[in-house]
Image 1 (cartoon, rainbow over the protein chains, first blue to last red):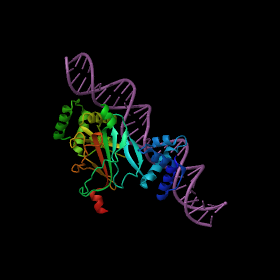
Image 2: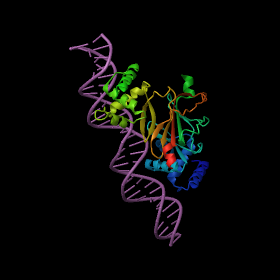
Image 3: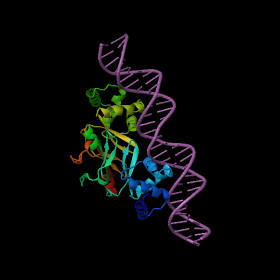
Image 4: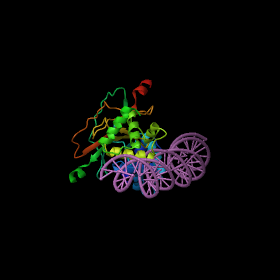
Length: 142
Length: 142
DNA sequence: TTTTTTCTTGCAACTCAGTTGCATTTAAGT
DNA sequence: ACTTAAATGCAACTGAGTTGCAAGAAAAAA
């Protein structure tokens, strides 16, 4: 893990008033350096041989989500993808695009989905937008 | 099952050129009369004692989704909710709202999410919008 | 620093929605 | 009615995520 990452991780944990442990640092570090949503298994792989137990990772994610450090970005094949929430506001996360051809998923930070403020008494606290189709590469080669 | 429902079911299967079987009719009937997304288990419950095997239901759903009769509306607690796609266009389904307080999920047919046509080379074939927050009832009592 | 307390971790066993293989049945075309 | 291709049921399986509990590690108190 890079020093810059390590520092950011420390800051994140401190500002959220969470205990600094090796497991949590490694997990946050993996997410920070990934720049894309990761599954529990992908987090383990990125940390490597000394990765914490999967239960620990799931429990850390639960804690991070409660502390608004991490978002549950989307589900694919019954599996959650997690990502740092630094690009999201509290109530609105960026859309995610999954290519039906190559299977890759991209974060569309630049594409904002305007939302009707008044929606008949519903108070929207969180929105999740999942898009499916062909990514630029696959649509060209098709 | 009402006669009107039975007739609609027959028509749906016929127009999709799918074999008319008891299982498929019962499943589509349940979805038609529900007017809301249902899980596999809820479909079984609504059909009752003579409900088809769960494998049959899953395989029927697969077929229906491929034939564009049914949508996979959203996932909640690792479980898919299915609904008839008659209120959806091919590429855009209505948003679904889940109340974090009472747990109910509503279809927001009237709330349309405008979508940017040009999104940098991405060809959007399908969009799924999940909203979370407080429903009218819960926001009043809070 | 040492002690105490509280939170975190690992392990093993579990849960449960959804899937797979295969034998049997059934719808639809001839 | 006969044939064939597709649909169904059953049992066993898969795999992401969960739970209970004992052991270990931070932070707080002494």
